[in-house]
Amino acid sequence: MAQDIPKEQWAQVIEKTGGPVEYKKIPVQQPGPDEVLVNIKYSGVCHTDLHAVNGDWPLPTKLPLVGGHEGAGVVVAKGNLVEDIQIGDHAGVKWINGTCLQCDFCQQSDEPLCPKALLSGYTVDGSFQQYCIAKAAHVARIPKDVPLDAVSPVLCAGITVYKGLKESGARPGQTVAIVGAGGGLGSLAQQYAKAMGLQIIAIDTGDEKKKMCEELGSRAFVDFAKSQNVVKDVQAATEDGLGPHAVILVAVAEKPFQQAAEYVRPRGTVICIGLPAGAKLSAPVFESVIKMVCIRGSYVGNRKDTAEALEFFRRGVIKSPFKVIGLSELQKVYDMMHQGQIAGRYVVDTSK
Image (cartoon, rainbow, N blue to C red; front, side, top):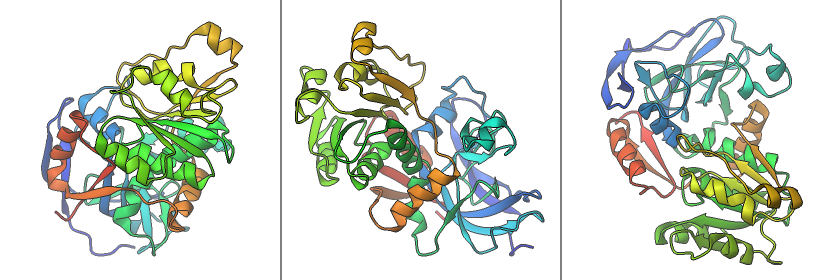
């Protein structure tokens, strides 16, 4: 059962690690028995996509590879075992393209930890193409009244930071510091934190990012490039001077990961989300012990986290700052990422 689907489509493809990406026509694939084919209308561009191009992580990528894992579109074909999603439904292709659904982790709602997980735009082709395959069990269900361009960054950035905030254990009224607050993940993290009743300290650099963070409701902005002492400035931005209850690290450089345990308050939690290439975590042992600091990693959300994160968006309390650019211009976005020039998120329109 399928709509009229072309045999070929436009896509951005990397043939070798390090790129470049090449805009060209490739065949449209057919979904397997438990899969759907989604006509991608828009896809957010994430720093992970750049890591995939560069081969930054100790995880081999599929080659040739179509990147992208924030794809929002319409289901145009489905396998014969798929019953709970219909042709014409709106759906999102996320980082977790599919899992086994049988292992310990899948059975405990930790499907992102599945050892057989398929990763969109990394181990399987992702959403920088007009038609994308994904396991039906794992595509996000997007309400039809939600705009597909605006929701696409939520499919990774939104879900990921929402999960991190949940993992932090921060409660309404408490303070959370968001490091990398002016980027794609950070801009969404601020909004989810505000919607969850948290006070926010934004940490980033640059006047444009400061302005955006203030508009998103952060109570303080610490410019790490201008600060003489980031640790003291972050602590001073809290009401009692003891530091934030939680730190959400979505930075793409290593240094913030070395600082966070120093300014988080006693019994605070440091949540590591960003994945700078080759970076190491370190924290002073004495202070970490006597302050009873918790340092933990937070990966992407599960299917329930996805539904919750999308519901915040549907209710209008999350607005992802984004700019739209044609899929054919993806390399321009990567170039801006290299130079740290992006405030908010870029979304590619697959029709251009």
